[in-house]
Length: 174
Figure 1 (spheres, one colour):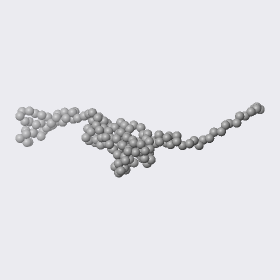
Figure 2: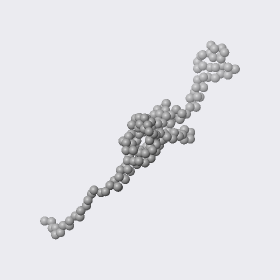
Figure 3: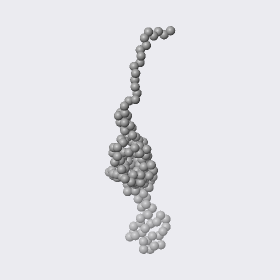
Figure 4: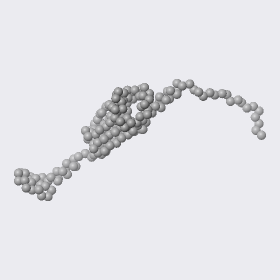
């Protein structure tokens, strides 16, 4: 028994000080009820597996996530072919930018910025990852060079030639 605090060590554990009894078990219950609901983080955008891009142009791909946990415990970052962006692009042609919070820490954002889109970028998997103590989520995308390919096709001369179909005269089926 600790006489200075009046703690007996019996039952739930009561503290006696100045004639007031506080049940420690009740305090813990109140504290647990005050904590916000904790869920695993979820990526909200991008939501399509391909992003249209044009060779030689700038591009910014935002990754927005619901942290599901207090933001200070949540990490959001991009990978390129399972490597950190800084390792894959040491020249900073592609880099991560814009770590922003929305009101009440509901959404966090980390964008992937391309100074110029190169041919190799169309053959790279880009993955946004969001992690917290409650879990993780990831979403992988690829760049689609369809716009660039259409421009190239428009510039190429047509290789298809057409010739007039001869008319058949005096055709009588038997």
